[in-house]
Amino acid sequence: MIFPFWNIIAISLTGNAEYMSKPFILFPEKPTLEAYKYIFSTPLFPRGYGITLIVTLCGTVVSTLVTSMMAFALSKKNMRGYKFFMIYLLITMFFSGGLVPTYYNITETLNLSNNLLALILPGAVNVFNFIVVRSFFMQLPVSLEESARVDGANDFVILFKIIYPLSIPVLATVAMFVAVGLWNSWFSAQLYMRDENLYPLQLIIRNYIVRSSKPADMQSLEGLRDAAGKRIYLNETGLKMACAVASTVPMLLIYPFIQKYFEKGVTLGAVKG
Image (tube, helix red, strand yellow):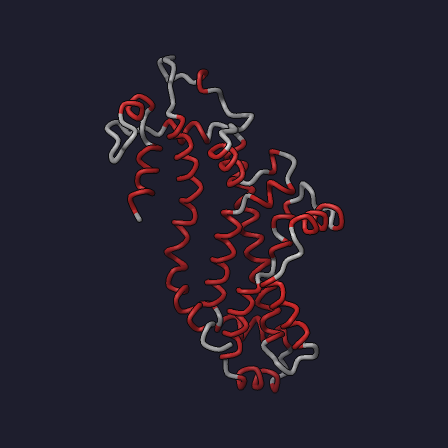
């Protein structure tokens, strides 16, 4: 499991001459950061980082908030229209409108072409996450809510001041699911983004690695020079591996802080249906 990822890191740190002499790299003899300097030398790559970060943060907050609020409402089986909404949501787990109707809905009806909201709003509610959060809410003691209502608390006070503090494990788990999905997403951006300046990081990397389509504002390989004016020959494969590493590191840094909530959150939300 570790070796493929380590091999990617090793190749990204390997110079062109060494890689051409032995493509199988375990430990670079002369590690170099030229590949990372190169990919960050263009405004497009850091800009893609920023767009992906904005979409991930905003999308995670919106999705977690909307999903949890809906789960709280539908955790009450005496709610008016309970069966209708539950059946409506469950149907969407098995059937979708299809790609073409979805595309026209986003671009024509909602007019979200070249708008970052097209990457956030369509996936704001994930039914699987909704079921996990709802199941967790249903296990909380009803007496907590009843005592709060006796003290004059309304639904919003109960949700934000009582339910949410008790639901940190499941909310953190769902937020991580959403964040990873948004961070790795590129297909929606390919459909709805026409301006290259609005491309998220994953679409830029996908075009570069899969289609070998280098971003337009990257420096040419032949034009790079070192401090002494000597031409630098970069490892093309190393550049692609550097892109892959740079896009993976943020999630690797965040995951250890969320990991402790994963097993607890999913398990607690899966006991009761």
